[in-house]
Image (tube, rainbow, N blue to C red):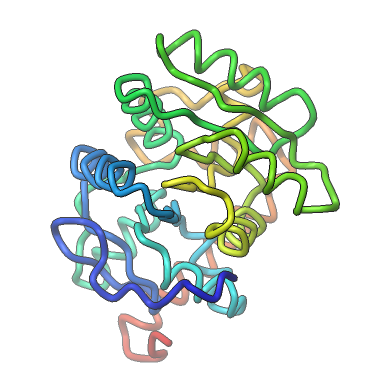
Length: 258
């Protein structure tokens, strides 16, 4: 993790933060998240956005490095219905789900308007390129600074390539917690104003994976669609019962947030 990152106690959202299992989540809707993104881009300084879900928070209870990254991030959005439920149980309800894939599309809209460029890093070979092509077609005037798959062993050339590209925004699709740790380790050297981890979003943007229907997303069942589409995600889904048990235990005073 970058040494320059410090505990961000105030949060970037206009409505403060809710705390779940010791992790502060920004209380904001998509409109205010877009406002925060615009502010980050206008600053010209590096900012890290974490899209937090139930599995990520559960993992952060035992992964000290991931936990500190979440606490240090400039913006932490609630990226799962489970997180919204957990916040309600803790008596600090969040406003709405602000998913990484939806926020990424809003970022593309902003960049198409402002002329800021985006670099896509991660996923299997060819996926980032296809995702970039589809995003460029969907958002006219969107500038793609470059792409690189997630299969590399030496970070330095990749970091240098991103910096030389002049990108303002970096999308990283490596999965939790790898993407968060990679961003945190290199944020100060990348030359971007905003870096965000997007998990499997490139597969959706590329057309390789179909996103859940709107009714499933609206009713909190997108995770089920993902599991059906890709049974290998069972390890991530397995974190959900653990998250629920930990939240209930904390609510009942049987455990305290770290």
